[in-house]
Length: 527
Image (cartoon, rainbow, N blue to C red; front, top):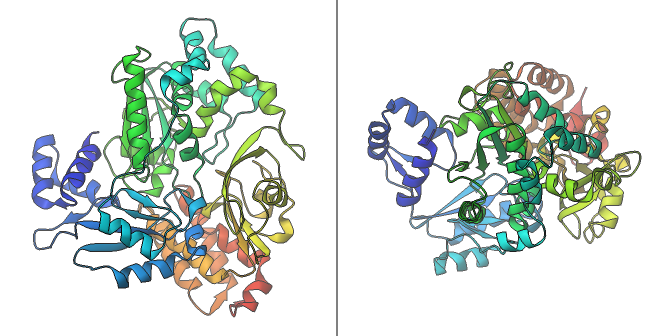
């Protein structure tokens, strides 16, 4: 299970993975070379160099090409960087969403992120050689404890709070999984507790959904609130260890969490080694819980067939509780302020709070904590500062790339779980990307399908072939509805996991609600 950590160490030290190094690692770990090579070549952040190949240039510049960055001019920026930088010294490559959509376009130079990037700004960073992660100012352990932090954890461990009482509180608060699926948190705890031990707890901090950055927002500000919620979750299922899987695109947060965990160990709040922090390696598919577990075990992140579910047979074959970062972040807050406080927020018949990652054509993008059930129009006007200058709302993605696309005429629907499905969308992780009348819908569709085609793990044919086939169909001047719908149905019915099942959503949304807009942009829709 340490294979990916060792691969990171080699990649960080040498800037690539030579076959000599992989052979040595295979011998050191007593693993087949095939297993080491398969894992190394699965993840985007590992550069495997064959014996007859030259290693990549010393500096790598990654230009984010997610939808939010595309709207902000990422394609033009990438072309300018390719023209202005020496390819012998600097490698310029595209990269999927980096979780900083509120500052689009974003470029990563080494491990340093350039926000609101321009060619001149990126070239200046290259010239200075400042490739380290940006500094993060965060709440340290002493300050968090001064506010009463870790009080809930102490009460749980010392018997003043029972698991049953805490589960009842979370049920009344209606806390649900905030990574996308929206499964009630207390029920997930219940199912894992029914399984025989030993059990594990794993927190998925690999928020790779384009447009999503809420987990980063909370981790950067109050990592100890997150860690307390995670430790309480682990206590609730009597987990023998707590694993945190953090995406590699958040290098500054790796340092923050390592330090925060050290603080906990030094204060005697956790046993040394109980919390295990692991790095992702650039694979969107690892946002799926069983793929994340495969990655934690040192393997390619390919989703497992279910049943059995991870609550029954997860990490190392044992029952595993998997939660999202924001989900566990709310646990200490809800206990402190009460279930009624959390559930008391809401609009249009909905209950609770939602953290919206708002980006695209709005004046004030960012993470906005708003009542569940708020509509897009309300979210834009009350929190987003209105539409960007000169732009008129045309549509929006309520749940990132996989959440579908809805037209401006449906901007008064409540944004919450179980609300948008009948209209062809879902809220997922509440990654709201706003599109205007000035945006190219074909470019939008091809951007999203290219993302899914690139991020497919390749395990199942409907997804592996279907995403590539759909991308090819969208690049034509004529879109044939019957062809696209038939392909979509096969992908939704037969793909193993949510990637292939959700990939057609934006295309189906465009075919359903944007026919006139497509025609005005010279896309011929037949059928």
